[in-house]
Image (cartoon, rainbow, N blue to C red; front, side, top):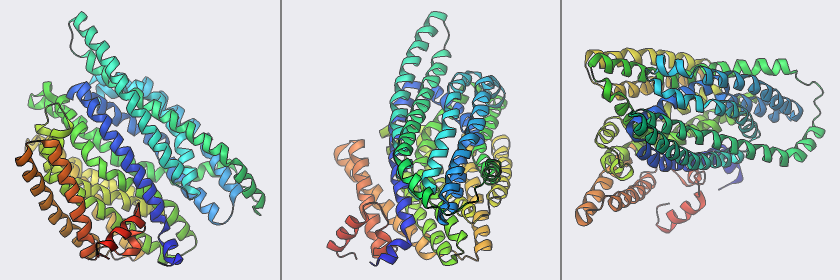
Length: 549
């Protein structure tokens, strides 16, 4: 393979770094959420997830868009060799983070009662919301550092910091949940109550989020200290004499961030609105007592499982922005189109088989991971695993539109999808009485709407025509065959050994092998593209040994 071809798709290598980190982070998240759910039970898990939804919204308003805005601004300046202005963007963003992070942290701490009582219709969630307030402040600064490194073209600091963050999050979440849940249980026995243990346990779980964020921030600051000598050399060679003012930088951050904030807030506020509507629906339907138990299964089992593969798309989306920004800035249309196509294909190669695998092994996987009542969780996963495809695709399409400087388009598309989503959800709950299955169905419809609207926008702005065969049809065909092999392997092994864990693991290994072979036999990927995958050279070597290439 020529060096030119290697460089052409180098952005996928950076995406693979973040994707690999995303996989590790999600696996750690999956591993620690399992004992967390088993410690807190479905009620405590529901409270934890409810508080986390509020935290996510406040984080979006304060700092979620900062990595994207900073990476976009830094990448554009670095592409022209303006290292001094790139560094001023970094310093200006830190000042922005200080103001925004402080404001939203105070809102979380002093507004916890309002969010829990009025928005979530569950006052006990206030403990966990208040515990998450300091994390909002820390995450603002962490977002600036990560965006700066991504704008410089390296995803390694972000990837490592994400892994460190999740490791410490896992350890302190489990310890905090166990300690405070135990304390709450003793207090409940003394006071003859039953609600304090889940509420305090959820707050204990939230402690880990802050601990992980703080450790990740320290790591990013350490990397910056090591990089300062290189930075000074780059700035000395920078011929630019016209330095940007901090007010202008702040305005640019707001201009870039606002559409992203609105778009992503619409994405994430749907979870809060879903819960609020579902909570009031349970009162209307006379099933208030089981509200938080049901929501705990939905948020802590179903949503947790589908978010594992979606994390890979989020990682790829983060890597798309700087690359597309640089290509657009240099008016390199062919690169914009090729990177758009590769991003979407790469996402579908992962999302489609993930959805099929979660469908055919929904019951066994949930049974393997959770000790609480898992019947409902398995049914929800079986019903709604297609959401993996819709949200993975819509996420990377959002990033593409942002990278080609159509920042407001995802906002409009998300608003339209959300309006349809809420109307359908209301009909499913109050009209069809579908309960939590109505939430799953409306959620999938929201993701599908975003895919269709974003796809139409990309085609319009780039005069881009999506390739269908290798992006959707062949991966789907390979995934269906893989699903049959996966289900058959599980059924056979379970009948022979009557051991669920062994059967699931062997079924997954069989699925990966069958899917990989089929992708090569169907010519869905070629040797050049395989080099862009993690451990790509080893995969190519194995494929050649097996005469698949």
